[in-house]
Length: 103
Image 1: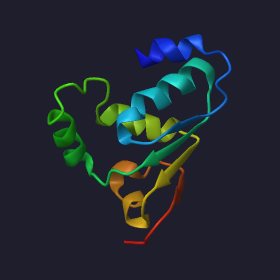
Image 2: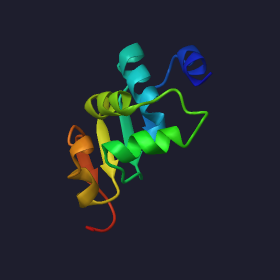
Image 3: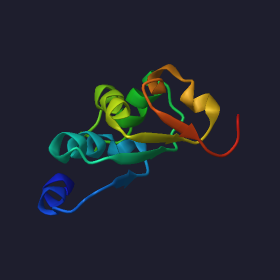
Image 4: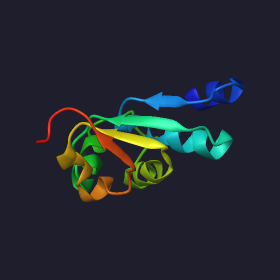
């Protein structure tokens, strides 16, 4: 269990997450220790696509749209892959910047 392991590590000063699938860890660490996070989001999904993508993964029970929105609000910085992704309604909570191309 990732959360149990992270609870045992007392000197985490920053967490870098590299996918939307780590939304629960962003929330957990912020709630547990006020740990700042940099969250890199590669996924370019709207709300309905997030629901569909999670349904396609039978082992994914730890996140849903609400957890993702909460993580976007709690992450210290969100790195988007493009400006268009940042403009999508589900991602409008994120504070951050984009890297890469503008399309």
